[in-house]
Length: 346
Ligand code: SAM
Ligand code: DTB
Ligand code: SF4
Image (cartoon, rainbow, N blue to C red):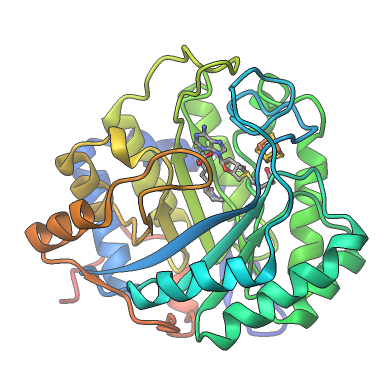
């Protein structure tokens, strides 16, 4: 089914679960060929966007996300800390910029931000922007007012993951609903900020849950500008500590399917890279992932050392995407029904 956007006349594909499942299930070589073909229509396949993360408020979170080290309900051994001082955040951001990061992502272990914290948050956004980096925050749920405040402060991206399919959601988190997540995403989009939303693989979900999660993301009023696909980092003391590892090929299939369904979004190979081989990461990049987190710590857990990533980039001939290097405007063709026989363009 196609829907036509009265403003742009662009035609955008609305995905059914069956169609998406057929993409996901096709022979791997066909899936990878299709994903790489779509990728090359919209991006330079040898450039990867690099984001840096900082936890600006760690631990003590009231939510019960069963994968998370920061929930106060799990005995992960992480101690809670207060919101960082603005100067500290800006000093870290400057270091990240000097090391090549072009987007700075700040995360807080909150259910949602409190009004009293907003002046500090706004100062962080303004300070990081003044350093010439794109800004991203992930602070939990936002209402319309909070979204507008962040947008007015100049925040470029807001990260808010749907994490998994609607059907599996209640098995992972009980303190907020899938509908709550969708409402925040709508508030963020309405305020004019770019949406960063994706999920985690390895939460005990099935193949259909992975596909359904991508269908929800791709069918949002506008697809997210950025789609992080995390591989669960099992955290001791959380209900997911012994979750079965994700099959690497299934992970690659999910990335490829995301690329095909959301052709102009940045698909981010997010948490879990320390447990991935070079070959698995290379396959993810071939499948259309074009963004990573750099730096040896994510929010609370490990990420590859920068040195290790640079060696991998050199081996694969990859280069960092420049700051503010944006996509060409999506063209009608970009969103038209997919054509598996599209020729490779370069
Ligand atoms: N508290 C905010 C929220 O949840 O909306 C923002 C921070 S939260 C840590 C950001 C995202 O990190 C989560 O939505 C989840 O997708 C991802 N994440 C958290 N713990 C993870 C883990 N152990 N492995 C993989 N991804 C994880
Ligand atoms: C996202 O999807 N992954 C990042 C970012 N958005 C905020 C967070 C990953 C967190 C991994 C676990 C940790 O470091 O605590
Ligand atoms: Fe809190 Fe976010 Fe962790 Fe959930 S994922 S427990 S909301 S910090």
